[in-house]
Length: 189
Image (tube, rainbow, N blue to C red; front, side, top):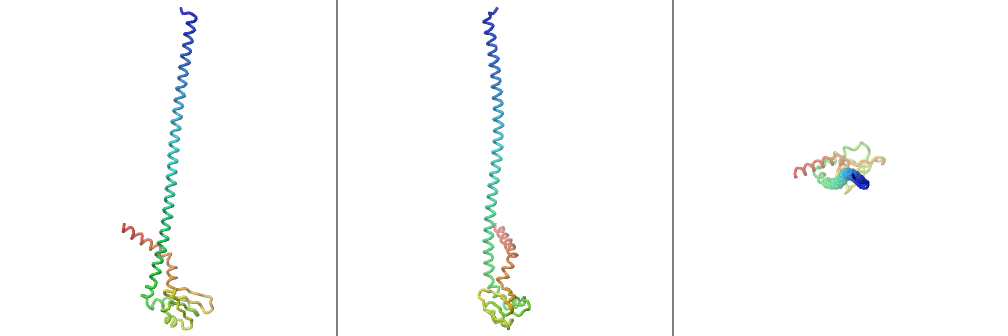
C-alpha cells in the first residue's frame, strides 16, 4: 500500500499535470484567438489598403482628367484664337474678290434713315459717296470691307463691316470649324 506521502505526491503530481494541461489548453485557446484576431485584423488592413489604393487611384484619375480637360481647353482656346486670326486675315481677300457687290449688299442692309457720317474702306469712298450723297464719307484703314454709318441726329450707329460680321458669326462658325479640324486630325491618324 502506498504511504501517505506517496499518495500526496501522486495526487499533487496529478493536480500539477491537470493544471499544466489546463494552462496549456488556455494558452492554446489564447493563441488561436490571437491568431484569429490577427488574421481578422490583417483582412481589415488589406480591405482598408485596397480601399485606400482605390481612393488614391481614383483621385489620381480625377486629377489627370482635370489636367487633361484644362489642357484641352487651353488648346481649344489657342486654336480658336488662331482660327479667328486666320479668318480675319482672309477678309481683305474676300473684299477684293467680292467687287462692288459686297459694298452694295452691306449698304442695302442699313435702315432707311438719313446718315450723316459713313466710314468705309478707303478704296470704297467713291461707292459710298454715290450711295450716301448727303453724308460725310470718311476712309478708315481699320475697315476691311463694309461700313459704319451714324444717323444725322446721332441716335443710331450701325456697324456693318466684315470684321463685325465675322465677330457676330464666330460663335456659330467655331463649332463647325472644330468639327472639321477634328475630322482632319482623325483622318490623318
